[in-house]
Image (tube, rainbow, N blue to C red; front, side, top):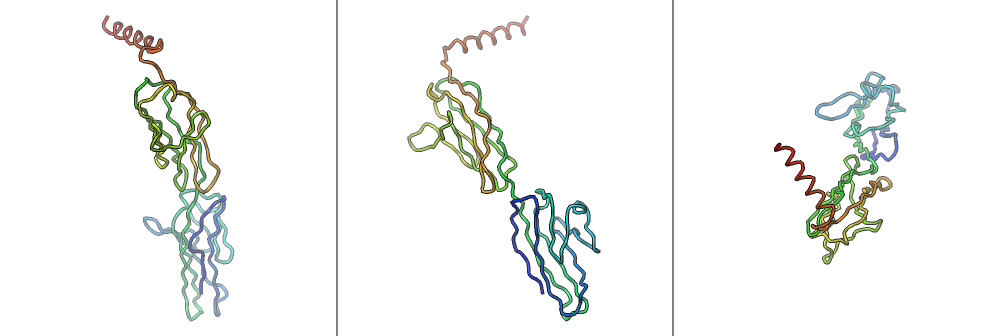
Length: 219
């Protein structure tokens, strides 16, 4: 009675949810679409679309097309065709819609400076990608590939880059790249990290500034 697409992965702005049917006698069956969530809501009922689907969806036969899909459109949909004149009067089909989102420019947390010998963690996050992004780190536009011999580690799922006991050689321009299976990778703007000597002029200036601030607060 009904045939359907069990899983629709959306890579474009439109989603086509297939629902095809054949009837024996009834040439004007009733067609309804519902979406399952915390409850069941109507998408198409009484020959018209409801709620947020009005004005951005269309139906041809029983196949539903949703335009300008958003993440909120993800979920399980049910197509129901009622042919009251047929021996089998009701047919149902379920379609699972998964809306995929390509990588977005990640937010990168790179401090401007750190002292020699310190441990450091750089952070990278793309909150919008579906499926979740994986991450790569670059220093001076060269990929950082962690091995057992390198003084750093990269967590490709969490987006962290951990540097152990940093040295002058760790100074440079750092950036992070997010990627998934949907679209092209995206990178944040490279940020400069300086590794400072404990006795560097910049460190002395910082100490003087702290001393002045403390003195001012006591007077």
